[in-house]
Length: 369
Ligand SMILES: NC(=O)c1ccc[n+]([C@@H]2O[C@H](COP(=O)([O-])OP(=O)(O)OC[C@H]3O[C@@H](n4cnc5c(N)ncnc54)[C@H](O)[C@@H]3O)[C@@H](O)[C@H]2O)c1
Image (cartoon, rainbow, N blue to C red; front, side, top):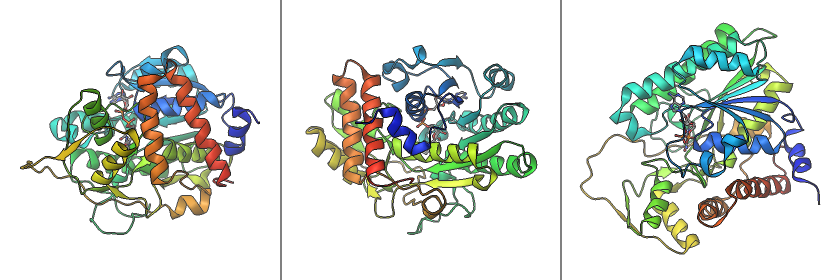
């Protein structure tokens, strides 16, 4: 049996081994998983973000503060962020720090816009001033697109938009990325930059408010009935390792092959993998073997997009990236991820085991090869 490291090398050609990787938002759900995967590939990880919100956060339960160099900081504080870039001298940087919730963006639009817009500007400005960064990736969202509620998927070339403050902030973050790309990063020997758009990501370790899967597991913990806002809303559910595999593959290409990989990339599920909130919760209850839900009635309707699909032809064709898990496996990985927090004494090890299983499945299914 080959070691985990060897198997990983086949996926990303050993590119991250020994590399310095700076991640903004490492204390968050996706950032902490990205950190774990990079550590397992032998990268040196440096994180910059606000402190974790609760003791249940993945960053805390996996004890990442003892495994990486992390600096508490706000992305709106340019001088602190750029000094961290100068101290670390990263080879590659991933920007995940953002206010990521639609409902919270209605409650506090100013914080959402200031974090998500000026955070992006400061990130790319720090990249521009750095003499070490060779590649940088901005993580936005499928919600960056002008949503026409149509049945086919959005392509990278479709217009940006966003009605609610969160979606508008992600559309704007994309415009900032393309402005930096054409104004500062188009010439040879400048860093290669890209932006990435994924769908609704699920997996163990996410305890954010107003997200359906964390809400469900909280309801199970408290022995309550989950109240569902929009049972029929269809979402591109993905396990967190799916988009991360795309970001890592793209990062490897930007580091080694250059500007032809710059620009926007969708990393969603396959076209037939979109399911309603109710289907997701029913399957989760079935696999976990417990839990209850009911739809909320007489809800005051804030605008929330109801149909969102990403066209992933570009990633499939040019990166040879493909989603790995089917819907059933996505939910199983997610249930196992939460169960491991309740049962495992070493949550970090259980996360690494899931990365390993994901890598095995990806290789068996010939993704990225
Ligand atoms: N989770 C999803 O389903 C999903 C889907 C599409 C896009 N995204 C995007 O992925 C990224 C990560 O999302 P997540 O789900 O891990 O969210 P999260 O809330 O778990 O993590 C957000 C991270 O950003 C940091 N942060 C927030 N505001 C900050 C600020 N002003 N200064 C410094 N750090 C700040 C937090 O401390 C945390 O580390 C976000 O950009 C989000 O918009 C997430």
